[in-house]
Length: 221
Image 1: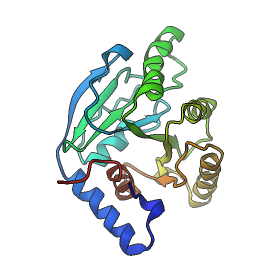
Image 2 (image 1 turned 180 degrees about the vertical axis):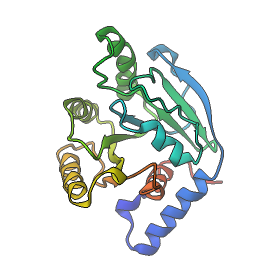
Image 3 (image 1 turned 120 degrees about the vertical axis):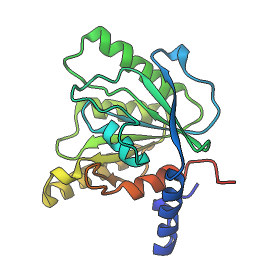
Image 4 (image 1 turned 90 degrees about the horizontal axis):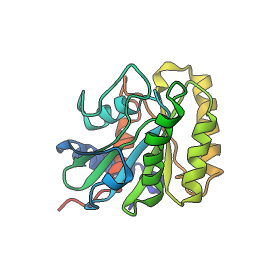
């Protein structure tokens, strides 16, 4: 399992990015949805989950990652995704799109229901190799983001910080946001050291994100 952080030189880095490109050129298809912990699918492949606050741009990023416009549903209304959606990528990896957390307008009962199943999944899925924790590059880290990091840290669930919407922030502010995210990664033993910076609009960081995800997939036959 070698990712970009372990690459020894530019040639190895480019090779990893190419592996990511080849994997994501393969079919990626929705196959299962779960709204309750007891509904989770059988374990068959390694899983990588995408997690973040409501309206962080998670569905848009997943769509950009797989090169499809509507694989993950994009809603203008935060908090609409209330289930765990599972996607099979070339029979080598499962991508899991988790419900957004921190949606203030949802009722407390509603938040408990859909966020509860998400956190149950994070704590108890043995084939979950990494969580891509999405943070909006334009705004400060929220208390709900920090709570998610603490949960994964305590549960020893490996996670990697991915900044989204990097095209919508100036370079000085973006540099400060990256520095903050890197410090958050250092502060949590379960966090991957490499912070990824992405934009689903411009494609920034998508090849690197594909490379990281591909490093966790079953090797090509």
